[in-house]
Length: 197
Image (cartoon, rainbow, N blue to C red; front, side, top):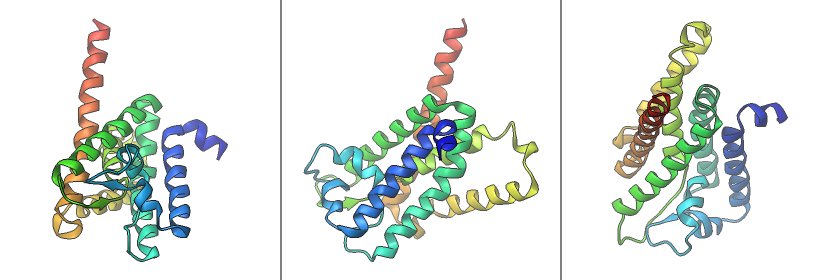
């Protein structure tokens, strides 16, 4: 664990926070009212804390853990590639950008409605985009098993983008994560080019 925290501090911290909130929510369903996204937010922190929540209010407990597991399939393998290649600072910026843009997207899409949403899916999709972009240089060094693993995970991520699977709101939130990564990528590259001049 110490090595993971040292090598991938952003991905590890994110993983642990989501896990702790999932455990707490398993025992106290009222966590959704306190921390999930609300289209009519009660507390200011819900714009941030909603990113870490999983499951859905009133849904069976197993759904929380399936939701968390599916997001971990994006956050861990792709996020670690992103953090290893782009660095912890850039990974944290991607995380914040995805969190902010997904929160804005949710508020705009459900403006005036009394709706609630959970999950870090937008951040997961930002990490998928970042992981794929950053693994190009090392792709040839991966074993066939690793190639197969990333192909399966990438295919699963594409399937979960489809609105007939997750619904239009989730699709828009997922796309906001992808947009977040590329916005950060091109902005930081632009600043890097200016700094070299």
